[in-house]
Amino acid sequence: MTKSTGGLEMLLGDIEILRGNKEKALQIWDKINVDNIDDNSVGYSVILYNLADRYIKNGMDEKGIELFNKSFEAGKNKNNWSALYSLAFYYDSRGEEEKAIESWERIMRANEQCLDLDEEAKAEYNTWPKDMIRKLKERQKNKIK
Image 1 (cartoon, helix red, strand yellow):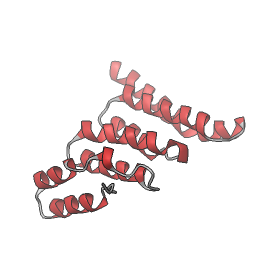
Image 2 (cartoon, helix red, strand yellow; image 1 turned 30 degrees about the horizontal axis):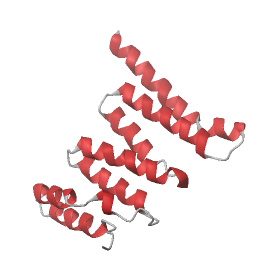
Image 3 (cartoon, one colour; image 1 turned 60 degrees about the vertical axis):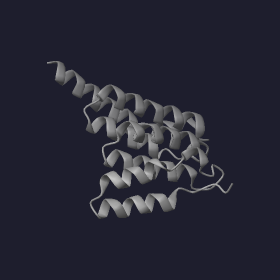
Image 4 (cartoon, one colour; image 1 turned 120 degrees about the vertical axis):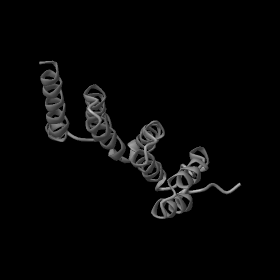
């Protein structure tokens, strides 16, 4: 059996979105068997990421979060953190500071574990996540007041 890239099905779903047929698009995307996508293809994590993004944008948050996590796992050896950043921003936009902080912490761990950098470079890579965590914690404090 030939494995799919999922790309054609995503585009067909996109066409249905443009036609105003959100339910039809979701049905098409639901038929994509992510376990049948060729995980050796260069774009495997990108396909998962793009599908996750489509689900999130169309109100299927749980499915999108699941696929963002799969996308990160598939792409972490290629230093593809896009899915983790998307999760951090997703949770932040929903006011879920604790989950956003957890996502930023995952980004920092991934930077430290997967990037072959000296300590100074690692610290620089983690400046933005640390700033975001600080801002989120400050927002949490302000909510409590």
